[in-house]
Amino acid sequence: MNTTVSAAGLTVRYGGTPALDGVDLSLTDGVTGLLGPNGAGKTTLLKVLATAVPPDGGAFTVYGVDPATPAGRLAVRRMLGYLPQTPGFHPDFTAFEFVDYVAVLKELTGRGDRHREVRRVLDQVGLADVRGRRIKRLSGGMRQRVALAAALVGDPRFLVLDEPTVGLDPEQRMRFRELIAEAGEGRTVVLSTHQTEDVAMLCNRVIVLADGRVRFDGTPAGLTARAAGHVWSSTERAPGARAGWRTGTGTFRNVGDPPTGADLLEPTLEDGYLLVLDEKPTEGTEVTAA
Amino acid sequence: MTWHVSEEDLRAYARGELAAPLLWSADTHVGSCADCRAVLAAVSDPAALDAGWERLDAELDAPRPGPGERLLVRLGVAAHTARLLTATPVLRRSWLASVTFVLVATVLVVHAVDAPALFLALAPLLPLAAVALSYGPVLDPTYEIAAVTPTHGFRLLMIRTVAALTASLGLNCLAALALPGYGLLAFGWLLPALALTAAGLALSARLGPLLGPGLVGGAWTVLMAVAALHPAHTPAAFTTAGQSVAAALAAVATLLLHQVRDRFDAKPC
Image 1 (cartoon, helix red, strand yellow):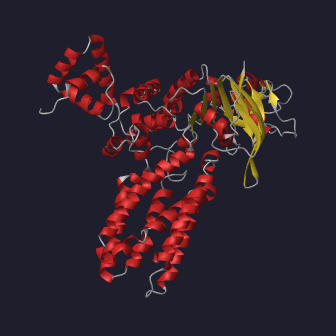
Image 2 (cartoon, each protein chain N blue to C red):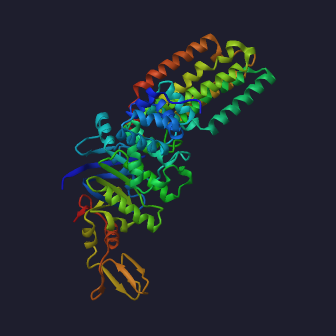
Image 3 (spheres, rainbow over the protein chains, first blue to last red):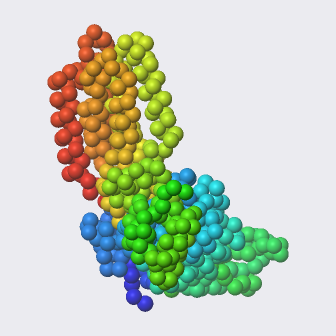
């Protein structure tokens, strides 16, 4: 699959502290999930890719365009849909007015065509019936869908979604996953999340970020496979486990290096994620791929 | 119903060639006037009529432009620019009401104690504050989304500035007109207001949307506090020399702002 977004050595420092520390990546069409603990640099990386924060070091291209110059930045922004971590709204706007306002900012200046496009994306996110309702009267899940509609308006090729499923109930989260999976057809979508289920269910690619560095870059199946032979069950908390917790059946599920003869279990994506996070990277050799 | 859409306009409407704002009037009117619908049917071919109804249906659930937005379009502002202008946060009623309250209170105090310097010191700060509060990640809820759209950050800043300045200078002018006894002196705030606003914006490119205008506002407040120590004299800023300096500062700051315009786009967050 062709590389659509590629980055080399991306570095961002906040007051001398590196938030991103030499991130290399290459994305393709489809949905890429960005996993990592709080403070890993996920939001900073997404802000850089969305051209909201210029990197202090390194460079990246989106569909071959480098946003380092004013002309390049404009070209990238014309391809971009961005859902920030905490999207803000003018609360007195209706859902239609808000998406229409963003559409104007995205240079859709013809009124008729713009309104058709706004209706299309509001239909796509399932808000056709409430498009005339003021945003302050919408539920949290609906507001999140309004923000997604604003990201989708203008049919961008590159979608950057920062924790799109946070704060949603399970049903809304499922609906959102369907929307994002649909959006990933023929587009490059990168999203950050704390939910390993999000990645397992909708991403064809996963990047694990910790301390501003890429710890893993590969497929969800590859990340799961990292934990093969490292997950076992025990009746007591295993002292050598890197992570362990009591399950609903009363036994402990342990992740780490199992003792000889341990009762091995099928690993999950979360097991692989925990193992990758726990590995102490050696300078220059920390990235693992699958 | 006494007013009807002219046949010529109905023909243009049927062809989809009627432009706003007449289009909005026709859409609303045709929906409620059987006579005009009959004329429209007579001058339209059936396919065009179906398209017209489809358009009318779409119009009915499209957002209705508010009075301010309609006025701007009538004045010749492009409809999409009018949308951006009227989304300026400080054009909300709550902000306008607060500024009006402050100005009315100040004018009453000036009348009571015959101290025009109070009004002259306060009035330049209001446009500066309005502009500072109109654009930036802290106070504009949609800033982060807007900042990465293709609309240039400087253009959006200027659109917001025009909207905030127009509203704020207009209110200041009304307040000055309520102080007729002081003649032209009551308008002595205008050039300092422009100088402070331009300087605040120019500094905000480097220092951010709060610190830049904040420093400029702070410097003005100190200047006025020092002047208040000598109440017998007109503060230097409102003398001919002071007004000339303010005009020069406004011009220099505007040039500087233009020089650094790309900063608003390159590093928005």
